[in-house]
Length: 104
Figure 1 (cartoon, rainbow, N blue to C red):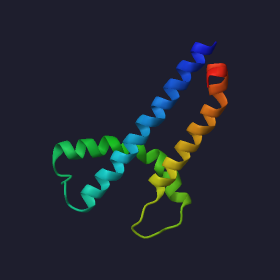
Figure 2: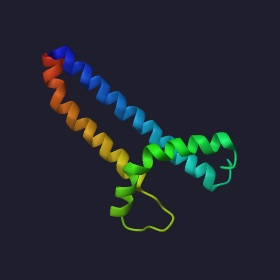
Figure 3: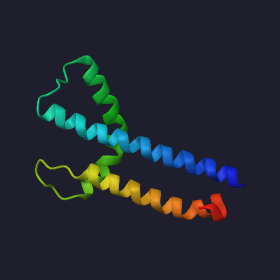
């Protein structure tokens, strides 16, 4: 049972880590577009931005609806990063002792 839990814990942590990097890429790309460093008329930039937006927007939209309007400042990625780290800590604290026993 322990190897199965270790594998699930690894997959969970990897998924959270990958989504964190996608979220950071989304923020950086939005800054680059806002400051006119990259042009969304470029087909490659548009495709990358479209994929990243489709991956992050369904999760960020409810957070944006919950947060107060701060003008041009969007804090929803920061809130999501904090929630993801909280979830990671809680799940690791719950599953790691069962998966690794006395080693963890």
